[in-house]
Image (cartoon, rainbow, N blue to C red; front, side, top):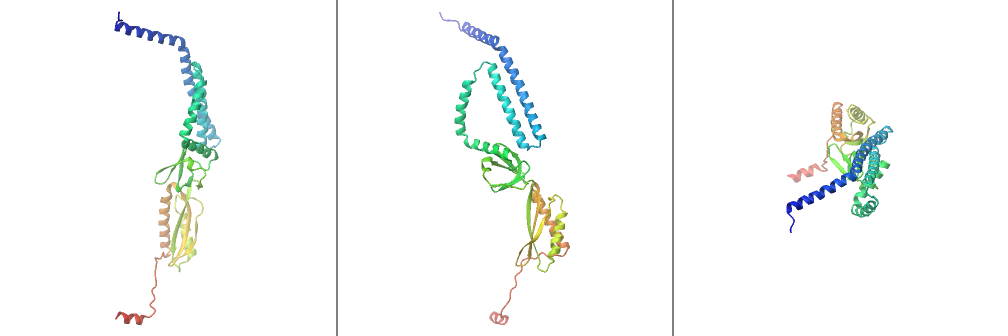
Length: 285
């Protein structure tokens, strides 16, 4: 005799109910304990991470290094909490550790480039060839360091561009680090009959009156002798984040200062000499 479908469904639901009830009776305290341990452990991990970061900053460690140490402390505590929770639930973690090890080997080969970036990032954080706020020139780009992550370094510039450099390309390369400023190089020509000492003094005084430039003294001197002018070279420091703004302001200030002191900025000239004007006149006729 076939069993009634309704009775079969009721029997299955009854069996499921009994299984759930038995599980909750036998393991309810373990589950509640595991949840409590997990919540408390995550709370402690966050508090410990913030405390470690605060201590590092108090000791005047770099911001990036402080954040890295704080994250490591948090990960360690979370890992310990997970092990305790699994044991609380009666789960044997030994096979899981073996499986994770095998998976890690395969994953390591698959993401070798990513791991290279992370190891290079750790090297950068520890050795600190640059920190947040520094101006670096690397691989043909220049910018202010905005972030130093384990996988990449993030630069920005006056145009508010974000330049991402994978850390594996940083290690082994030549890095130019000028801290928060960048040198500005200008060149301007003055007439050969101009008072060069006066021109240098006027340019130096104009630079001193420009707001926003680095307080380091500028360099002004003769760079070379052109066909129509004595070319003066000007070098000064400006914040990288306003590099072009300071350059344009300085060019305008120098131009105005030279004009106010009647120092001529000549344009290219050529002298044409006729060796035999009479012969040239006859040939034209």
